[in-house]
Length: 191
Image (cartoon, rainbow, N blue to C red; front, side, top):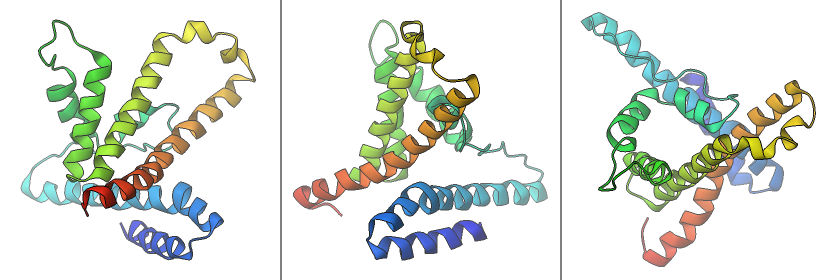
């Protein structure tokens, strides 16, 4: 938690510089890691303190960064809320005769975003993650069509590229959600 708090301070200091390279460091380095370390540290502290009351809390974070795809990332990030949203929102049919996987994913991620706060940033954040997850699921179900692309480079290179792409996507969503939310907030008068 201490390292996360230090990174939050560093993120603010770099963000105030306003130049290109400090922004890249914030986008890919200090911002995601400060969020992860402070959140995971807080949840780990709760897990440790719950032992005094003989309560066993399930783990909430399991090394989400560095995963090969967005599905693995979300399976390891704040696992408690992800399980709740998956069980109570994703498997809902919303009045349709059969489950629409893509619609359900968008609803789940919008709900997760708005669970953080009712604000444009979090709504956009949730929808962007939902769209990214839908694209990944579409690719996974159609990957036989991409067989030629899947043979480029070695297996190790493809694995590293998929992990880097997942990390950059997760970091980019935060940046892009901020950039979209600012003009929407100005138009709507929201804060």
